[in-house]
Image (cartoon, rainbow, N blue to C red; front, side, top):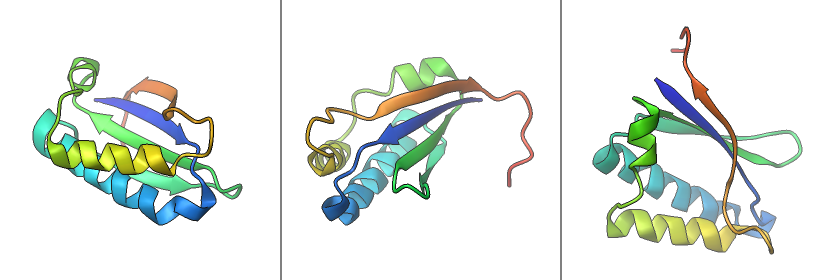
Length: 102
């Protein structure tokens, strides 16, 4: 299993829009691209972090082309970012070694 950790720079006034877009993109990636899902977190400083799981790195790398629903979700997310933030930051790309998460 392969995991990617992202950091998003979200405008505080557009948090609901961001969450709606994140859900649409995540569901489309699961349905259309072989993604295994994602968890969205917010830390104590208000930063948005997502942890996405994939069967392998190759599947993640091929996940670019998706449906209109996913593109709508991406637009919602991008439009919710703080000024100057162009895209999410990939913090980590990780291979799972052991897994005790339920």
